[in-house]
Length: 379
Image (cartoon, rainbow, N blue to C red; front, side, top):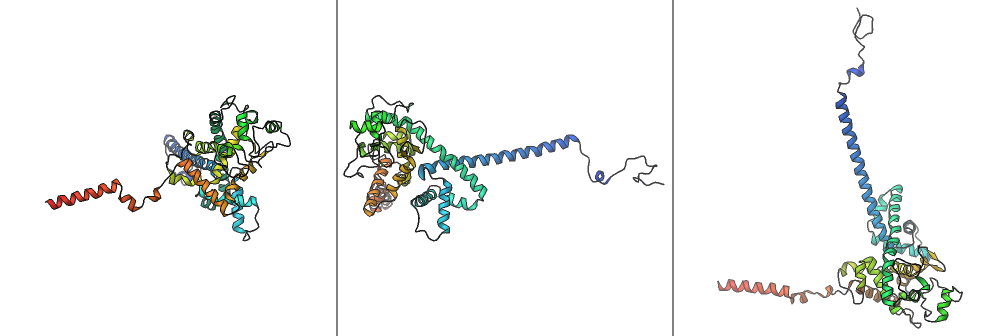
């Protein structure tokens, strides 16, 4: 007699395997519904992951724009980080080069502008750090184009109004700017020469060896009233109306750039004066304005005999590397002048308790208490 499932000839049923015994049969329709639900959850998770990555990318790109505007225009972020790491590892920090000092000052400004970044770099692995720095670089690259694009149209209008350009400079045309245009030429002319001198004008336009325009000269547009004092070249430097207008157009709003004749409107002074005091902000503006005055249509670090990176370094060094205490005092006064010009005057520090007690809000509160006391006495 054969046993069930032993495969002998007397057994008419199919063999029953262990796999069949361990599963509970379900309909294909039910299995398909569950599979679709599982795939839907996977797609939802992927979308959420993509959204998180997109938010991170948007955040890092926007933060990267601040680096070019407030930290360093030319130094790569990786170089700033590497220099700070080098100084942490090397105990001998006395024998440093000018470039290393600039990089370290740049990293310090980076830590101030993006306070989250120092700790973030320490918590990420190498691949994650590279990805974050790549996104930040996207922001830094876009910032320069955005700012010069903003200033290109505005500077044309400002020069037309202030310098009575003839012919007028068109906002959509850069080919008729630069030294071929008298108004732009006067603003771009090095401080040691006078654009009105026919010899100077012909020499600069002819690019002769006697009149080389390079980053070693301060352009006239950086001076108050666009004129330098040969006996005191520091007098009026960094105080031109064009610079203040450019700064406000980039860092506050284009419409606010038209309000530079007074000492500002006083809005948000306490919060924003620190931004004005950052030297790199102003160096950024000066570099962009020079580009917008020229007739070149694309940004190059070196334009003919003019090296923008060295020009940038010269401006930052003027603010950050004064020769002594007297020069530092003049720099501090200059930065206070900029704060007033951009954000206005503020005297909140003078609102002592004694002064406030004599103002109408405090006076009214005291009068109301007196009236309450009088009412109680009458009862």
